[in-house]
Amino acid sequence: MTDRDEWDEWVELEEESEADAGEPTGPVPVVAVVGRPNVGKSTLVNRIIGRRQAVVEDTPGVTRDRVPYDAQWIGRQFTVVDTGGWEPDAKDRAAAIAAQAEIAIGTADVVVFVVDAVVGSTDVDEAAVRMLRRSAKPVLLVANKVDNAALEVEATSLWSLGLGEPHPVSALHGRGSGDLLDAIIKAMPEAPPVSEPGVRGPRRVALVGRPNVGKSSLLNRVSREERAVVDSVAGTTVDPVDSLVEIGGQPWQFVDTAGLRKRVSQASGTEYYASLRTAGAIEAAEVAVVLLDAAEPISEQDQRILTMVIEAGRALVIAFNKWDLVDADRRYYLDKEIDRELKRIPWAIRVNISAKTGRAVEKLAPALRTALESWETRVPTGQLNQWLTALVQATPHPVRGGRAPRILFATQAGVAPPRFVLFTTGPLDAGYQRFVERKLREEFGFAGSPVEVSVRPRKRLGPGGRGKAHG
Image 1 (tube, one colour):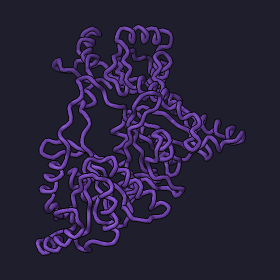
Image 2 (cartoon, helix red, strand yellow; image 1 turned 135 degrees about the vertical axis):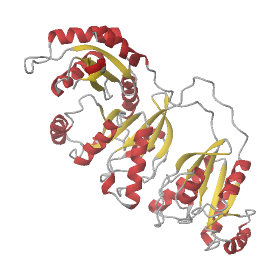
Image 3 (spheres, helix red, strand yellow; image 1 turned 180 degrees about the vertical axis):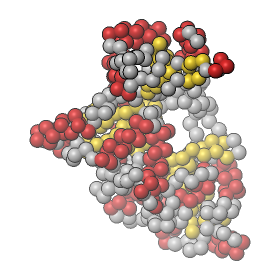
Image 4 (tube, helix red, strand yellow; image 1 turned 135 degrees about the horizontal axis):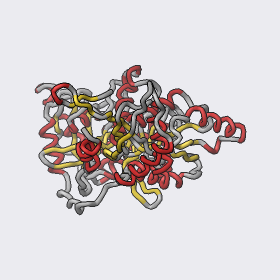
């Protein structure tokens, strides 16, 4: 097989186009699920969205922020928002959680108020009803934990709350959930208009990092509101929290995630599911902002989180937070840590910020734009091969066993992240492959984006004329 034949066989890779990020849609109705702690709100959310995504545990207070999920029923799309337990006269963190629930109610089109049918109405439920009436939003009363017909009769006592007919359901087993979804759809406003074709939605950004590095504080800073519950106790965020924010004159879809303490395989309970949600948020994002605590040494856990982002193939911005706490001595040691610990990812874009004071937060937008532009860069095939020919002539592959493999040509197989394929006469040394990648970055940039370089040794004709892969 000649070099030109091989080119004809593989050049189609260069013409592969990336799939669209998704069909554009207009704004969708929002359904807020609220109630006092431990009445089964997250279990009901999982039932509504048809998958186990909201974190569920017997301990009250697992959900702390308002957490949106995409849902669909009988062809109608909507957003369902899980909230933390609402309590009147709450203090400290509980007050922040209750405030998040009230914000969810204020931004919702329909409110689903969940009551534990086994316990019946409580003073907290009655206080919640008064709060809901002030909101003037359509409210559906849900009597949860109705697992049998006998309990369905008991649920009728909830008429006394004055919210109309209670909808008996078992979120755990699915009993009555279809009727509830029908009622939710009926209570929604009319279907919204669809956005014009070709309009791209906000870019998706995952905020990730170990506990207490300031992810929720940064989300609140860029959204200019108390969007996520912030507490000095590490691990306040459990579910990913979506926020549409505007920085640098551009809308962004930010996702605040749980701080990762351990490997997913070593975590348990809430932490295990939070780890899965965080990994899912990285996969669903286009670019990740990894927050590191500038006042503390770069840890093994920081390295694991960076590896998660790189292996997911996402664009990357490293934000050194709490820069207001960094003095001259710490800066000296931090520079040495960066040279040592981040040596493998010199291409990552770095910014020094303080979510608490707002220092340099505005630098995030240009850093994100640069990383995404690199992530979606496509190098024309002719330009790529002209550069590669000059590189190989200047620095050929070392001779091994009396022979040196040659690079015949290259093509870019895809973007997001950029993926390049080198077609060769034989396997390349790993060191030479890394050399090509480094020079590729020097020539074409790719700041803030991982780059994948793979090698395809030339096929040799085996017995009977069949192609046989070499190496």
